[in-house]
Image (cartoon, rainbow, N blue to C red; front, side, top):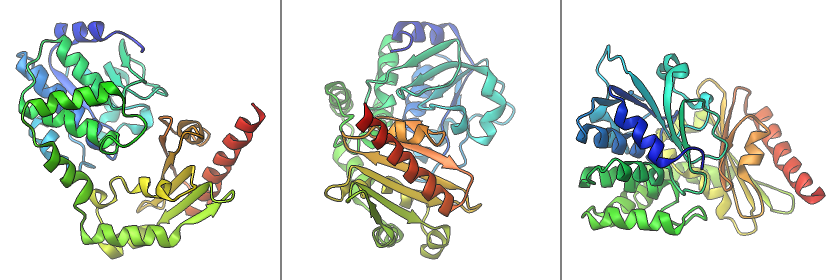
Length: 321
């Protein structure tokens, strides 16, 4: 752990006029953490807002949108939740790049600089870390805060199925459930209900899937024209990267999503044999042991070649070790 929970809580206790940042293509963890922290700080009488994130999808808007900062708000303390690198800052967050006062995260590859850094790499979700901070601040966990935290916990652990799920993760989720939130309905909405465009995108993903190294590597391409043709939104593509790893024998699942400007977002999901963050780091990205990502400005062909080479390099290095 980098930094101490108590030190982070003390820094928050002493400051005011907070602006909380979430990362590009916001997921349930970054959004849930921001929502829970903002509401917790407000409970303490602090002025706290979340910076608007234009990438926020309808699935997670209720967590953050009610807390958006008003136009012209000037913060005294800027906080990041679940942001591992400067490249993950949204466009409107760039003016605050050098003004970050508190970093709260669980990515071991975290590269943000700030006077206060709380990075708990052993946590299954950043929501676990935020909960520790809220407890230290003596914030009362309301149902609204608990729902924010539960969504962060659930989404970052694949509904508690991924290997990053720890006893602490489950204890944190249990505390949220004890407050009366409907975990079953939240999980059904996040992991079971699918739109028709999502079903179409899954078919395309499986149709484009390629296998390498005797089936150890699975790679799928999602072209922007297919996203437009099916009418899929970012909500529809949420968690789709995990599908490549579900094929029997696959140790590294790669999903490449082409953006409108022909740049690419690459998601890597691995089993225990391979470090996903090590793979992504070779292309300028990062992440966790079993889940990593990187964005490349080159097109699909070059992105495919670069990430495949990165995986093969990691395999070669591990065999030499």
